[in-house]
Image (cartoon, rainbow, N blue to C red):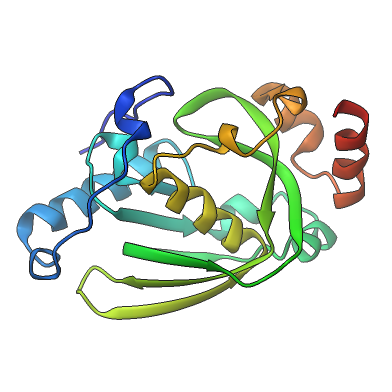
Length: 197
């Protein structure tokens, strides 16, 4: 079932999500949540969705960055952003550690903040300890775009939105983003940033 995605201003988006008890992870209720979140993410469409975005106050995230989303990006931009296909997976009760001192800057949007994008700094690499949908422990080492997705979605579980980390002066509409910035280089992003902050 496709769920309603909450929008900025809804107090649920600012709550810290509760950990899922390990014994509950394989319950039918959690399985149903995950199935509905997956369907909702695909319908949006998006590359990630946190449970809080659909009103479920639990530490559950679904992610998939499939090849069709990357197909319009020039190969040099994919390489520069370290963006590669990430298969569908579930992350439960994540603990994130930044493993890079350097940030990458790019526009971010959000399914819960309709209509705009802003340049948002994110660490270039992270380590995430979590459980999967079977309750198995996992450690994820992520770089580039996947690291950005993880940081964005885990922020949701902590009651944070990308607009908390970005500069309002870099805000643009999604139409402008799609036409002008979707395939922008890091240098073009840096130039835009310097001219607007």
